[in-house]
Length: 570
Image (tube, rainbow, N blue to C red; front, top):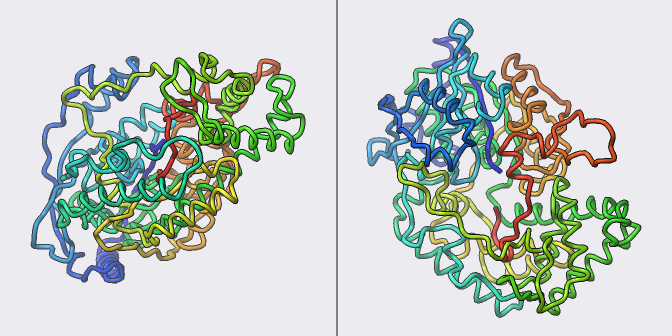
């Protein structure tokens, strides 16, 4: 899940002007760009917003939200800003950044603009203001005092973009679907590595002039250019997932221009090193199974997987090992299910524990070669059809080439096969149940462009971050690492769902209060929690998976097994 993010405020004119340019110039030099990059000036070219048919809206919203979206869209302004492709050469080739603005409804109390980014990298934020407001009336309050500004980062959506000939991204890198079922052998891993290396080399060398400029620091520079084009002295910001990386870099480079900033599901300050990120994510995934095991033990009467956590863990590990030794093939499923499938079930978030438990139970009595148990088919979906192509006029929500370029242009990890194979063996050893599912990391093997890691700096300005206690994409310890690196205050969300703050009204209320008052919040909110069990008796006081906003529900349930190992970092 990737949605969220916000805000803005005014500063003293003459004093800000002198301080702002000085700080920006120094920070840009530290990011490898000479000070003249800070002097780039541009204006917004406003134009008619694209109009979307009901067929297009059906790919993004519920039918009951169409009218509300169109009402918001009628108030939305759309434009582009010209920015240098390479800030080292501000008078050279330019590209365009596409943006949307929904002006504050309370003009008398308007604070300024709020940039927002949904994550990725590679995700489009063009429609994010509307999407966020449609999530809940709580979110919509942000538009009272703030102009909400969505944008497509360079390389994505309506901004200047590029697609590698094979489409780029991990799907293009594995044309044969990856290694065969069962334990990964070194020979199979090397073959998979070679496929990825060849695809990445072809992509990165197909348009290096453009692709090498897809970096987080350059997107931060674009935001500062857009801010000045909008004639705003300061800007607020809301970002989730990769959007937190962008926010941290933006704050580090232009601290005097930031009003208020909220970052949800925060990346590590070492996010430019994918080996570190992958190791942390794999460890958190195994940790979630250790949360699941006591629940399974407490429900042993229903699922029969063991009456203590230790027995459950031993049982599921044995199931994983057995599935690797003799992968499951059912008569009515195309997928062959090996230990990776068991690891996938063991890694389920708590909102899906009942479904994962039912599948694990079904696997204990399933008969190889016969029909798959219904619980298994519900997750694997042998007859599940791929989604249809988007209708004409649909916005591009994600760009796989940009995703690959942003990750690989900053990755300082050792990309040799020996390093990757050693990491994989270590992860399987220390994460015995889920390590095979989290898998190998050949994401940037073969990428031909040199790494350009970002630099972060501490500053005293207003910053609120939220970390999710049990999520795996951006594990909870990272938010504290980021706080130690750049400052700010941490709110803790005890859920398993990535970037859920903007989708849970009770959590969104904390966010809205922060942007309204600027007061830091080191408290907590529940996030997305499992639906109450029928025997619970009373209604839950917190947001459950059933009552959560649509995006949070989609991220939580149902489980869908993709039929392959999760080899690259998501």
